[in-house]
Length: 202
Length: 318
Image (cartoon, rainbow over all chains, first blue to last red; front, side, top):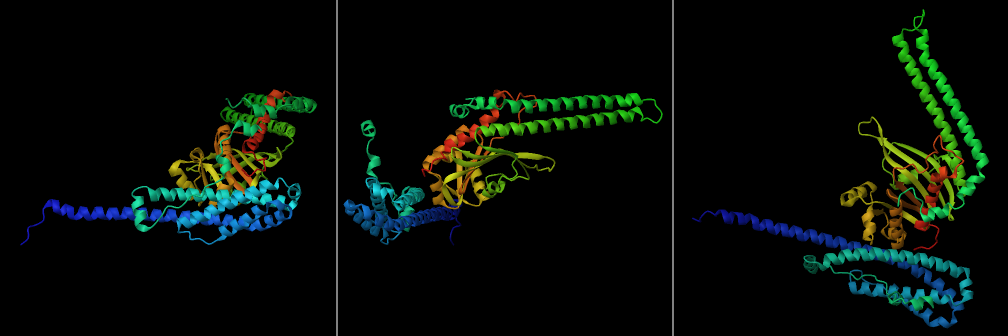
């Protein structure tokens, strides 16, 4: 006949499963929060794409107008067309490297368009064209929306990446395949240049 | 800096006000003398009425058919109280009538329009936006409208009350200005900026407003305000980092609970600072003295300051 269990072993019978259940619940809670954050980041990425779509729709008209006046900038116009095609290429939102490539192409397109409008200043006939004035105003508004979508996306990605990269989130994210997502950062070399008084006053 | 000292910008805006006021002297003198005549008449009628009312019981005492003194004295006191109340009412009407004429002249200096009755002000827009607390009674006055620095705006002074828990009296829930002005950007969704109430307060505010909170990048802004929106991207489009700095500057300049909402091309602003922005000039105030009406002029100049701090006159989308 087996000996009756002692007080210590009775406690262990209850404590071990209770701790395990608590750990499981905690892990599940963290997993749920990871999924919520990831979905929020994807939702924000969709918002970015919606705003980028507005920019794509604007580009053909701007290029058509620019071609009439900016003969010397054919290289830039071709580059913008090619960048636009690159940004339009489909990508998988669940793949961070594809998302990074997509955002990189968007940045390059933004820089290209910025250069185009800057160069347009050198073409008085183009600048005087009512359609380009309207296009530039629309472009500024669209850029304002893209910038807002970028801030929303970066905020959501910041939340996700903190949850994914900080222990124990890093372990749970590893098990469940939730990965950090890339930020959509401005890559304008001009804003990284040190400002000197000479340059400003020149 | 004490509130009653005009800032440099307000002083700039008031440049020429004294001359403007001096040019209005004939009108003001007429207004002032009419007011004084009416006041003297009220005082004389009051004094005579009071004397007769209080003397009547004594004169009637002992006469056949007269009221007994125990009844006559309380009746006389009640009649005297009614006379005094009537006198105060007439005097206040006089002060108010002169007040709105004075305000009309003050507002005219800034090229704005004025109406003492603000019942046409679209309070519903503010209520619909969730900017105002629940209220059972609203009193709107001092409607100022026109353009400040090229920005169309309409303003009024609001006082909102609701019944207390015991239903015995009405308690104030909002006192301060409401302003609607043009905003350079267009809002399609619904976005409001309300004072931050801490984690618990913000949670309940989110439940009240039935919308999601937008957490913005500036820690200072997040400490001062909470933003709720139906469109996270649009909230950030409307509230750029520059706009957030401007709102912090506005909050620093105008203490009180500052709330904003965006509706189409309009900015709705409510400031609960428990203050009457356009008090009527005092009954005995000399209306011909520019220094006596500067308070009203400074309040209008403050409106310009709101436009200037928020840079509502710029078409820039920053």
